[in-house]
Every structure is written in C-alpha cells, then in structure tokens.
Length: 338
Image 1 (cartoon, rainbow, N blue to C red):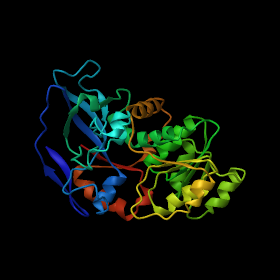
Image 2 (image 1 turned 90 degrees about the vertical axis):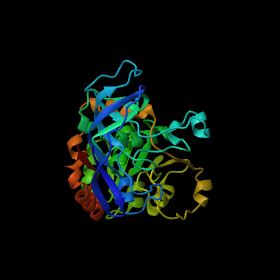
Image 3 (image 1 turned 120 degrees about the vertical axis):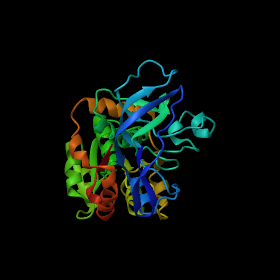
C-alpha cells in the first residue's frame, strides 16, 4: 500500500509498504485524511530529537472502519467515521498509575517515536479507535490537535471568571481558545498573523494582539485593568513566548505550557515567587478531551473549512511541506488525502 515517508532532513517520498495485519482485538481503518502537524514540520527541518529517520509521519487522522476483529465489542461498524488516539500508555509508570495516561513516561506517538499512519490503511487496537460518526472523515483529522488545546484548558481549570491569554493561534491554540470560550472565560488571542487573529475572534476570542506590531504588555494592561491575564496558555514553543507568559500573567496566575522550546529559556525566577505562580506542562490529550472536541464539532459552529489551509495528494506532500517550511505563520493545517 502507498505511504508517505520522511527519509532525511527536507526529504520526503512516496513508498510502498505492506498492508498491516489485523488481530482479533484490532480494527482495520481506511485512512481518508491525515494532517501534517508542527512536530512533522520540525522533523522535516531536522529539529525533532524524538524522531529517528526514516519515519512515516501522521497522527491527526480522519478514517473509516474497513474491518473489525472477532473480539471488538459493539459500538463500531463498517463505514463509521473515526479518528485515532495516537498515544500509547504502559500502565506501569507514575503517570499511568496516577491515571494520567496522556503523560505516560514511555508514550510512543504515531509518527514520532514510531511510524505514523500517513498511508492507505492502519490497524490499531479497538481501544484506540474513537468513533465520530456524525463528523466527516475530513473533519475528523482536526480532532486530535484541537483536543490538545482542550486538554490545556482543563489542566489550568479555566472558569467563567477567568481572563485567558492564548499565545499562538495554530490548531492547538485554536482548540484552547474554543474551549476557554465555551467555559465562559474572556479570551485574549496573541499571534503574529492577522488572518489567524481574525479567525481566533470568530471562534471565541474577545481581544486579539499582534505581538509583532503591537505592544503586548500595554495591550494586556489595557484590557485587564492593569492586572494581567489570570491564565496564560503557551502554544508556540519559543523562548520568547515562554518568557512572555511568565512576565505577563497576573499575580497568583496559572500557566499551561504546551509547546516545546527548542533552546534554553532564561526566566526572571523572582516572578515565580513574587507572583506565586502555578506553572504546569500540558501534554497530549485524554479520551474526555477527544469527546469534548467531537461534541463541539457536532454543533456545526466551527469554521472548519478555514482551518484547513490545503488538501494535497501523497505525491504533493513534499511540495506542501516545503511551502509550509518557507512560510510557517500562514498555515493552519495541511491535509494529505488518500
């Protein structure tokens, strides 16, 4: 079967691989759409130390069920639209024992620590198949990245009395904006691209700040009555945005860090103590986060078409990734259609 493979830095090709074998507890799915994500871009650019090349990318999936093993329980049927839970959990590490399987110490995400599913068919245990029968396979490919943003909002326990700043309006940041808005919070979106900021307003942000052209501190002070935001969700992963989060969050504020900074970050650690900050990481997503995104998408209010920058064939994947690498700020999601 056909697959897209990252072979070396800035190199990608279409290859033929064997169709996977299905066991009694497995589900065979026909892949319809797979999204390129930020980790795929970093792998393409040679900046992802967790990946060993060559690798088949892909963990943001829209698929339909092709066949089911004998032990798969009721609730699944042939032709059902699904997405995939792309993470593994060992069941033995501290995270798993504490019920936080999303942060498993030994997690292997599809397309990162193991081959992904940017291919025609995939086999996974039925426990990793997430039904989304009211959503098209194309839109199912948006569920996983949005669920990561939803999870961050849950991590910092956002409520309707919070002012929340979300730094970065990519797909994960959009998920955080949507979830915080659904919880009734006042949301401030920060990005360097005006088109993304405009869309952020449509999905729930009350205020937007272009960090390239605006004075972020002055804008925040104005809209928060000189207090700063109660919550900051960092969804970029750069040293400057990490520092911005600590500098701008209100006293006794909460910070959720989603993005990986690719270099060391220098903080004014006095703010940790003076502000009595709560700073936490937010990794991947839980099944409840996937369900929450599916429920949101079923309402029909999400501007899904505008979240998809381009749909390409496997043969066009290299060209699409090269264009994204040249202008990363202008892309929400690129989907590869099989």
